[in-house]
Image (tube, rainbow, N blue to C red; front, side):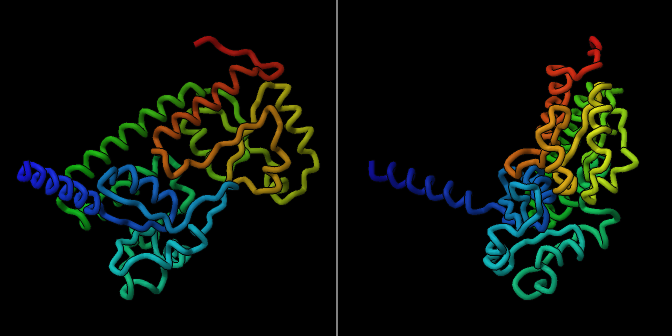
Length: 276
């Protein structure tokens, strides 16, 4: 019996030790956190240096505490040197930890990561970095990347339910997702003025769109003053930020379906729903 208990104890301690074998990766941006979390799966512990707050703004996690408490030798990933600098990581490489930049520089604004034609290429670079840090799990990371790409394609196909639906795009970055779904996207000529807080003519524009059955979409990159002005209108849909606890393909799927359901369950005046 004592021998049996000893064996069980050894097995328990061994399994507990396995949990500590996770690769700890600090990431500069929540978009990277989403990618690293999906591709790394249970093999990686993701530590976001910056997060989106409840208003959708990009802020330091725990007011910078995460960055200050990163252990020496930690694996740290950033999009490029500008992203590292914005995250407070610039100048720290070689002292406490090394910062791995995926690009030099990233050829677009980081918000381009919402673009389904861009994010798979960034995911490939994430795979390369993880595999260099943890080569024994390369086959697993490779499978996860393949799953990510397949599920992203599937989510975009789901979005095709919105094909040919006219949408007024007042988003800061989600418009590319509306285009990927095949929406007929309108960008008002006065949008720049409205984004600066001059709302002259905006109510009339919205009411006219509503009479034609046209919904307006905003997101967290829409300027705060405009977001506040539009909040509460029945013809406005807010495209959300993905939470760091969710995988991005599932989130994208849900956003497309939520927008479609808003359109068909509460038809706007003048809209006729086509049977599919």
